[in-house]
Image 1 (tube, rainbow, N blue to C red):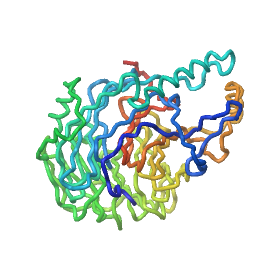
Image 2 (image 1 turned 60 degrees about the horizontal axis):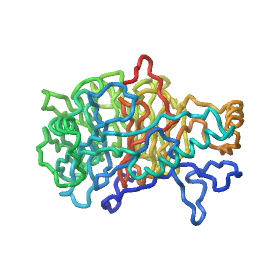
Image 3 (image 1 turned 60 degrees about the vertical axis):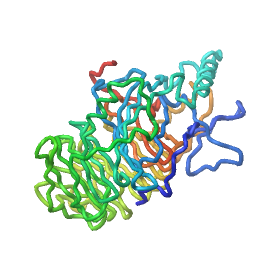
Image 4 (image 1 turned 45 degrees about the vertical axis):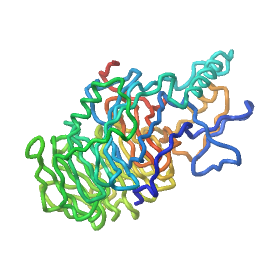
Length: 473
């Protein structure tokens, strides 16, 4: 698996976003769906973002590229649906020199947006709605560079980190406690409560430069792994419990002995032949976690045993990432180096049988990240080295009558390719070398992603979450 960034350099701000879709230069021409990785752009052509495809879309960068980040839970509300939004996150850099690396603690506030109708009430009737849409698009294009009439406010606190940060994760129960995997071979635990409290109390102190770099000692630094690694995950059920996996196939269990100290089991879990790429705790069983490996397998573990409780031969290629569904805990998704991703129902796991319920071959390059929606059991998002972020709804099926009704309502012909999977809900482009994505657990429909040219925060207009009993802020 190609995880790193070749020759990392300071990221330049991208002003325009590109998205799957093409605006017709001739009004009489039927609309055409442009397929990334299939269709070629003619000389002089370029893809332009259609801002009406998003309820919200913003981009920012922090200097050096970040291979990994995590959204930090906050106290602003469990379910937030009203704009503007505020989010907190932590991210680790991939700098050109080891001594230039840092962990950034970010606050991004005043994220503007507008909730859009999936299908206009009128389309091409008296022209009024089309005119309004045209005016709206012009307004948004005019403010494309800064993300809206009132651009988001980015505030950063930076902590020096020895070496590149391969992966970083915030504890669910105590979000100010974070774990980082470094390319030096060390796993470190940090307390960022001071930085998060400072950001929470600040509204005007805008800082994006490198002059505010702080030096802080970690709570703990573990050097027991025999090689560097990328796999790490906090337990969602047991506060402070952690697993970390390395490129030498070993997995270590961390148990908290206090709020600021951990005991790391020196005897690793042994079940993979090659590098452990990702780890995920079960959302429903406190002693169970899953791992995936370059050896093409997925293993299910019980921490009371050092050998896998079950091993699945998942792919002939490397299995890069996994995600355990937090809403439907029987579902485990995985993404591989051959560009495919697969969903398995663990209730169907039997010796000699493959519990696959869905398998997709849409992406053309290795899968770099996969994550289930925290609000919808059938929805997940994927990033790939083909520079696409895709969103999928596994509950969808093709409905010819519904498609015909949609065409009639829109008063135009929509030539959708027949070979596109009906479960493909959205394609987002415009970022290079996409490495990781996360859904915001407190803002339904919001996704954040990172690539070599910075971060995107997006809310597609056709991704909706139904949360029973959830009231708008």
